[in-house]
Length: 194
Image (cartoon, rainbow, N blue to C red; front, side, top):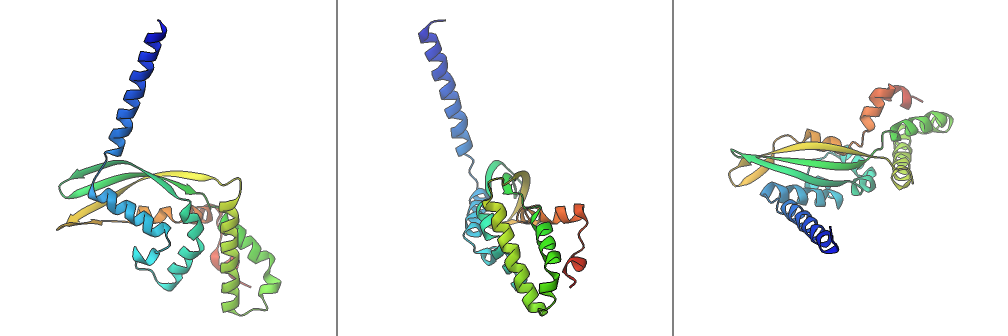
């Protein structure tokens, strides 16, 4: 095989790769645009623009705001059939599964200090510690990330596409924290009892 053959094969391979990449870019559907706009709004911190949040939920999202900005995703596939669209999205999410355990440990180690505070002060301090620990984790050099592939189902209602069930999507923003608590057997009431 001469140099011309090698160059020719390399050019063919480059063209095929370009075709595949162009096809991926061609994935278009209104639900893709809706999803991408939703992610943009969430990453900008406008959580209540997407979900109907109470004050407590809004606080939680504010604490996790920097972690949310580190979420990346790739829309792998879109299928549409009979007014239903399913987006397959691969998320890359910071793994914060150890955050609540670290918070519980800090609370346990600070019982003597916290015992002199009233309930609202304890809550305020706990939330500050929680945010500190989250930020330490996401800015750490050993930040683990988890990949999670989920299907998001949209249903067409007239001219609008609406998410039918966002529970799997919402779990992405839990950053594996609840799952770790279940595995470790933490008891929220016991940890916060002073």
